[in-house]
Amino acid sequence: MSAVARPDHLEGSGPVRALRVRGTWPPPPGPRVAIVGARRPTPYGEAVAERLAHDLALAGVVIVSGLALGIDAAAHRGALDAGRYTAAVLGTGVDVVYPAVNRDLADMILAAGGALLSQFPDGTPPRRQHFPERNWTMAALSDLVVVVEAAEGSGALITADAALGQGRPVMAVPGSVFSPLSVGCHQLLRDGAALVQNARDVLAELGGLEAVLDDPLPPPSSLGARVAPPAGRDGMLRHLSDVLPIEPGQLARRLDLTFAEVMARLGRLELEGRVSRQGAGYVKVHRRGTSRGTN
Image (cartoon, rainbow, N blue to C red; front, side, top):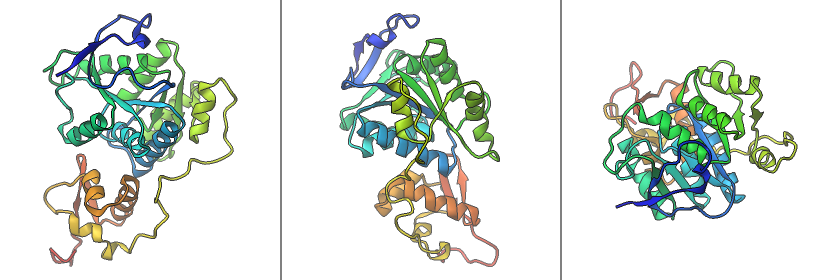
């Protein structure tokens, strides 16, 4: 099911380990950037990761991430939306997709010519101690690491520390001072990590040029381009259950919308108390005086 590879980026960076590979490896020529972050990000963080990965992929950057929920998945989707290669480094065997809800995403990565990579034997289940090792490998495979939303002590910061320990640059996206998910990124920035405001900042860092902080990151395609209907008439609510959580990716496919637009709408509905996040998905919230089934 998988082949064995010994990627050049691991040579001299620490213990050399053969990687199991599903898909196409090595990747196309070009710098490799790992985009990592929170598993339960804000809609802002998810949209940033998707757009940043999209723009970098279009510029010839190979996007690397860990196939986790949240920022990782958004980074893979951004590269796929750009029609470009992306590689997922797993903390399981390459034949064990974790979390299971990202099986469709893993299939999309392979179908697009990307790769699933793992340092663990086929059949290895998810184990807590494997993920810090996976994070080291992700950093070793990349030329630069970008952190988008990370709480204090999060796995994304482990990846950042691994990159710094291997002499690779780390960049961070600033966030809201009101959010605990900004603490990790702001710590990195305070400690000297370069700030990311757009894809050109990352490209400048890769090329050893001065950072470009003149333009904000453009929102993902269609985010804000169409005016969403008022929450009470938002057709999205008809596709949400009040019992079983439905993931944003499923809603995007059902409604033929981009992931970023779905997240933007869900964010508005969540602020209005119409939906609630449960795990990786969302459920519909019935306000007092509202009968079931009206949306």
